Structures are given as structure tokens and as C-alpha cells.
Length: 369
Image (cartoon, rainbow, N blue to C red; front, side):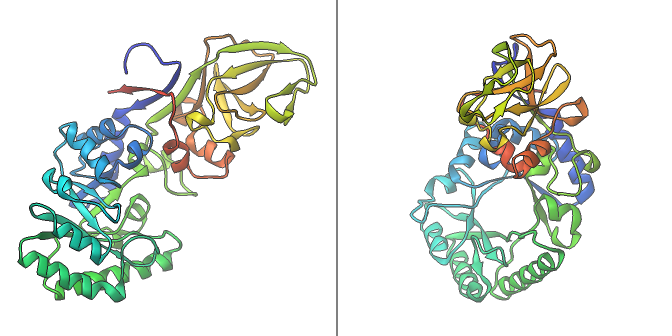
């Protein structure tokens, strides 16, 4: 979308994504960089975000599902792509045909990939302690032996071996890194020669150099958001790429004691002006933002007044001059004097990842170069 601003708008600065990837690559220094564009590019739009990340120097893309990878291929994006979460009954023919690398999480999944038409290029996932997908260390020997047999028969090519950190503590992360190195050694002793070893996402890539290996998977950082509780985007040299806003559709004066929104969880303390913003939980605005999250209108920030509804919420602007058609900005780049996704995360007792990825519904997207 270009031109006029949308009624409800997610504005994405693609230049920020380009700069963020470049900044992170310079700080991390691995040979390969994967930009993770799963979940619609963390709410920013998968295809535009992928193109921007590649322009910033990423040479790999990561997604969860093969369907997400096929969307990128349909957009004529031809860099290597890894997809790593699959239906147990998945048929990998389309992935192999589209040259999509397949993350393998079990022996059964490896056998299924080996049955695909053509040679499946795979990355074997090891569970080093996160407790989610991947093969536990005790079962790796069997997986690696099977992978070696499939390679000899030309059914698969093992391009990578990977895992995911829990980011629980320095000691836990170090233990997982040691377990990962043990798994790599087991793979090599089984006759495999994976060219890519990858363990770190944005947080570990920045703070734990020992976890970088050949490739890092950069997610939240490329969108200009910090993965840390104790360090913000600006201190990392990153710029938030997404700004969420909407046109104010109603402005009215009400007397003191007026109830606002469902359940009257907010009542006006004095005669005041209420501004109605047409965004609600159907658009991904957390209901937990009720009475808490900040909204900027005409350069001043106010908390939401009352409960967030499905399609709208109210802001008590006091005696400020606000008119229908003015813009309410929920979050974006705090350097512009507006709330951040981190501010919203704190208000909603969650993390910035959830704030941006949950956006949905009726938003119009506008991309700035």
C-alpha cells in the first residue's frame, strides 16, 4: 500500500530492516546470516521483510512451515530457505521441488523426507535442552546413522545440524552449547559432514559468541526490537521498523463520573474529552492493554481508558484539543516521541514479540523504502 494513510495502519520502514540486518551482521560476524520471517515476518509482512533483510546482507531465510517458504518462492525470492515445523503426515515433494531445506525433528520425519521425489536437503534438529522439537541426544546416533544411509542412496543431503537455546541462564545456555557440540561430533563420527551448524538466535548471537558457529538465526532483532529485558533497541543500534496507528473516529465531551467501555472499569474524574480509536482485539490489540497501554495523540501520550473491545478502544484526553481525523499512534520508534512495542509489552505483561506478531484483522500495511 502506498499514498494515503490507511484508516488502521501498520507502517513498516523497510530501510530500518535493511539497516538492522547490516548492524547485526557487523556485530556478530558469522559467515552466514538467516533472517527469520516466520509468522508474517513477525507481523511486518513476510515478503517485504525478506527482501529488505536480503538487501541488508542476509543470505538465508527461516520460516516455520513449508507453506510460508512457498509464499516466498512465489514472490521470486531465490535465496536458501529453511522450514522446520511440519505436520507428521507431511508430504515433502513440493518443498523439495521448490528447493526448500527441511528441518528434521525425528527419525520418522527423516524417512518421510527421504521418500520425496528428488533429493531432500535437510537440517537435523537436536533437542539440547529446550524440550520442544528435535531428537534427544540419546537417540541421535540412530538418526545420524539413518541419515548417512539415506545420503549414500541419494535420497537426502544433510546440509545442516541445528538446535535452539532456552535463554534460561548463562549456565543453561553453556550446557546446551556443550550438548550441541557433542551432537555435531556424533554426526561427524556417523559419516555426516554438515556444512552449517546453527544454534543462536538474536539474543545468543549478540551475547554468547561461542554459540554462533557457522550461521545465526536473526528474528526479533532484524525488526528493530531488543530480545533483552535489560537493553533497549537504541542501545543495540537498532531501529523499530513498525508503527501502528489509526484515525480517531469520534470525539465527545462527557461529564465527571461517566463510565467508559464495557463494565465501567474506568470512570472520568472530571469533565473531559473522549477519543475513540478503531482498533481492538480483532486487530491484535491485547485486551490486557485495557486501562494501561499508552497511546500518542498529537504529540502527547495517554493511557487507554476502559476495556479494549473487539473493534475499538477509548482514550481520555482531558482538555486537549483533539479532532476526528487526528491520528492515534499506539507504538513505533520511541526516538520519534511515541510509545514503543516494549512499552506496550510492559503494559500487557508480555514481550515485544507478542505485541507485533499478534497484529491481524483489518490493518492496512504501508511500506516505506
